[in-house]
Amino acid sequence: MTRIVITGATGRMGRTLLQAVAEDEESALAGAVDRPDGEAVGRDAGELAGTGPVGVKVSEDLAPVLEGADAVIDFTLPEATAVYADQCASAGVPLVVGTTGFDEAQQARLDAAAERVPVLVAPNMSVGVNLTFKVLEMVAQALGDDYDVEVIEAHHRNKVDAPSGTALRMGEVVAEALGRDLAEDAIYGRQGRTGVRDRRTIGFETIRAGDIVGEHTVLFAGSGERVEIGHKASSRMTFASGALRAAKWVVTQPPGRYDMQDLLGLR
Ligand SMILES: NC(=O)C1=CN([C@@H]2O[C@H](COP(=O)(O)OP(=O)(O)OC[C@H]3O[C@@H](n4cnc5c(N)ncnc54)[C@H](OP(=O)(O)O)[C@@H]3O)[C@@H](O)[C@H]2O)C=CC1
Ligand SMILES: O=C(O)C1=N[C@H](C(=O)O)C[C@H](O)C1
Image 1 (cartoon, helix red, strand yellow):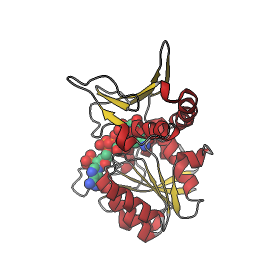
Image 2 (cartoon, rainbow, N blue to C red; image 1 turned 60 degrees about the vertical axis):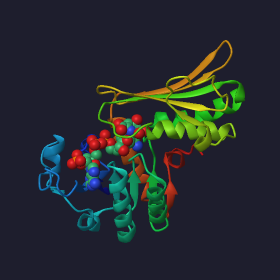
Image 3 (cartoon, helix red, strand yellow; image 1 turned 120 degrees about the vertical axis):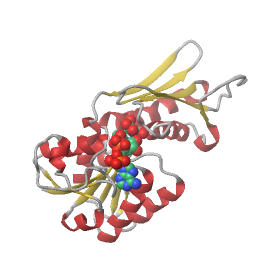
Image 4 (cartoon, rainbow, N blue to C red; image 1 turned 90 degrees about the vertical axis):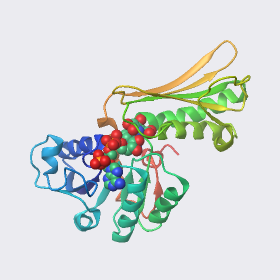
């Protein structure tokens, strides 16, 4: 039995994770954490998730609940994740991070935590997307520089970071396969008199609308043909199931930084 703490418990992913843990016979809820001024603090986490009472109250502080935990699953905001990572490292508790949008300093905090505990960080926990990363590597290598690359992603209106972490990772995979540097070659949206397309660029287009769970397409456009590699998520449960699987796996690993490619054997 893996005892799980969920941070961001009142969020879209937090609630889905509470349901996933309730349905899973191999894990148990050891804690649920929300922001200190959050309305859910003190409420039963199961009632919040609609699974019925589970006897675990939403806490405003991660540190006290770490004592009875095997792993923490975090889907919050980068600034919150960085603090939680410090706390997990101090308490010796493995961490799974689904949060996206980290800057360099926050990435460094995750790296520092990974020196002390196993930390799995993945912008997308679905098996399908992680398989897509592998396929993209093969396609980019085979098509080479003659095909223009564009990454198109669509998400719900409440998403706060763009492009999505998954889209950026897709761009990194393709850039690496083509021997390019995403920091130099990425173009985020286009407007006005842009001039003709620079062949080296990797374009990103973002759609934010309605309740779209998460859709990603990488377009390789050549002369007379197009290859499109895509993934559509229709339920957040695919991310939650992946994160729960990651938590059960990460507790078996030594300290270090991992992602879903490691878990799935896709390196
Ligand atoms: N890797 C993957 O597979 C996936 C990753 N994500 C990523 O997960 C993250 C969360 O997404 P989602 O669940 O939709 O977002 P939500 O906004 O629904 O949930 C975020 C949660 O974090 C809490 N939170 C915000 N700020 C803080 C803080 N400073 N301290 C503690 N808690 C805080 C929020 O509380 P409150 O509501 O009170 O502000 C809320 O409970 C995003 O970065 C998203 O991109 C999402 C889906 C899949
Ligand atoms: O915010 C979301 O919802 C999602 N975020 C992740 C990302 O930024 O890649 C993954 C997923 O597509 C849903």
